[in-house]
Amino acid sequence: MGYAPAAVKILSLALLAMLAACPKAGDKKPTDPVPKRDAGIGHTLAPSGDAGAAGAQLPPAPPLPEVPMGLPALPGLPSVTPEAVALGELLFHDARLSTTGALACASCHDPAHGYAGDVHVTAAGKPNLRRAPALVNLAWVNAFGWDGRYPVLGELLSSHVKGQLGHALDAALSPVLELPLYKAHFARVGGAPQDAAIQALSAFVLTRYEGRSWWDSLEQTARRPKPGVTPDPIVAGYLVFAGKGQCAGCHPPPLYTDGGYHRIVIDPRDPGRGLVDKAQTGAFRTPTLRGVMRRAPLFHTGAATSVAAALDHYASIGTTSGLDPALATIALTPTDRTNLVQFLNALTELRPEPAKPALP
Image (spheres, one colour):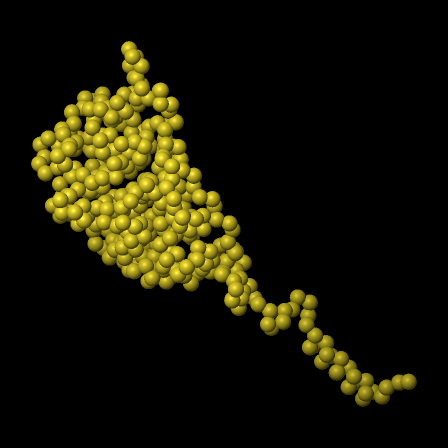
């Protein structure tokens, strides 16, 4: 049975309309979520409509750094987790937290110089009175800052974000909290963003260890001079350090700091520990001598540009009034000084410059 020409034409048009309505191979329904992509990192991010997704898919956080040889047993640090350290490392290096977009924690506390630095200028252009102290081995510290006014590391960090980077922590975090990778990091640490940021920065700073030096690897018996035998220059330097150099009084091993406060440089502009205890006006925290050879300038003022300059200062203490009464003039021979520097070199771990993280 055949169809009339008009009927064939109508049927053909109907078939064409049906074919046009059918989805082509590879087509998605309008309701299918479209994955975003971070061009800077290359991770496929969670769909924007997926309320259960935290953002980017992060790899597992690296394990916590091990406490190196030579340091005491680590005290309990429950808030230090691999996830917090991973986020803290990013925040520590991210200049977007500053008002200028050019200043990060790492700008002043340079990882290549033992997380220490010179006397720097704040984001607002105001010169600091003190140099950036070394942020190493703080897990064994019970008060923070050159003057020890902060009983908790988080208080120091919050204060310094505002004072150095230019605005309060909540405002500092605004530029990064919109980034999917940062959202994933914050979600993984948990808690309110400001709390997570403080936990993360604290965890990163508390795990910056300075140890594993050549001196730490030396057997105890090898550190003692043998009767009738001229000691190795490094061992001779340690004998100066522990004896006539008077260094070990304020820098006892294994941390090579007594954790106390001493007046070793007169600076009438800065009361130092006097902000906490007027009886200790002008005193400042004893920094660790671990890693000291990579941390010049020295003293809280940065006045000593080298270890040699610091030794010159101590040699002149007898002529300076108002310094710590426990200090006396230190009289060292040129050989004593050379050996002491050899020992301090042996107390500084030889390691490559830490790699900078790739920021989101």
